[in-house]
Image: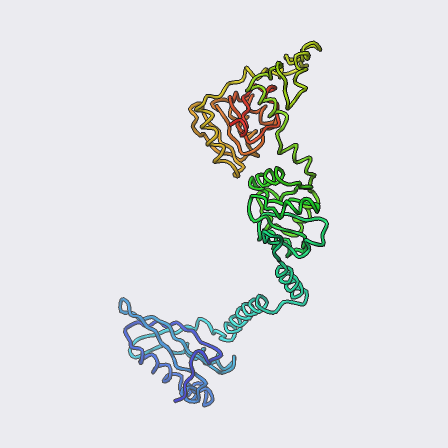
Length: 437
């Protein structure tokens, strides 16, 4: 007998059956064939339709509970819609199975092709997405990929130190000095061929020789390590310009737009020397710590110091407090600020060293215990909100006037930072920099 499965059918008839008594599955199937025989004519005879494969195998699932049976009937069909509906309606005429009363109710006729069509659409979407991700790129993408690979392949070795460099070092009048090989590769990828790497923090002799021949732009990472390299090179070589990557980023990971922006915003070495060299306030602090320079005796290094005793004749400088129109007068002498003990100096040095590169700040209490850590960008507001209990603030950054005002309003004793833009003599809080530690 030819039979079809639910997979090859077009429609599936779902019907529920309730029987007042206990019957077996063969009894239900026999009642379906027996009570519909001759009802619909020869063309729609269930036995003939099943024999020809147009009606599939009838599935019956029955459970018996409390003396009554209930279950479901599943009948697959490959007939058309009208014929399948007639077959489904014919099942509902069955009112008795064996000795028990029965009731069959067709719940739905499922169109198998709809579910198959839904699966086909979903699968087609997945295949299209996969094809778009793995398909060959267009001509422009191919050209860009080839050009990038060629530029990266152009990396060479330059000088006796065999430093990684671009192919345009000899011809270019301007040379960009970066930290490592990865930085050179990134610049080459974006079309900058006049670049060379230092391969470390120390300045090789090849770089020093280039400084005497070409215009040098030092391009470093946007972190504290970049600042250290700037200090190192400017102390041993003649650098013309200096620029940095955006804060927190390295040259090897920035984009072409960021590279152009950084090189356009380069600053002259003379200006950098004012920032990284020995500032004037450092000279003043040195004088305060060591005392005034004696006037007696010749000085071979600075002969002008012989004239220093005559300076009081021009009148003493006005360093006393000046009256101000409003607010609390500034200008309290540095001697009134609290002094650091050796233990505090050591503790602050350890904390500041641990903060380098984090752009954060520690807030300490009078027991030198850490109360919390905040970003330097939020430090003035945080300190101002803490009205009392803050003994010191240690930050990875430069101490500015806004932070000093917040610290004074909260009665902070010490401000410790990498550098300071505020004259310590004009502040009522002890300002300590990394050089002093």
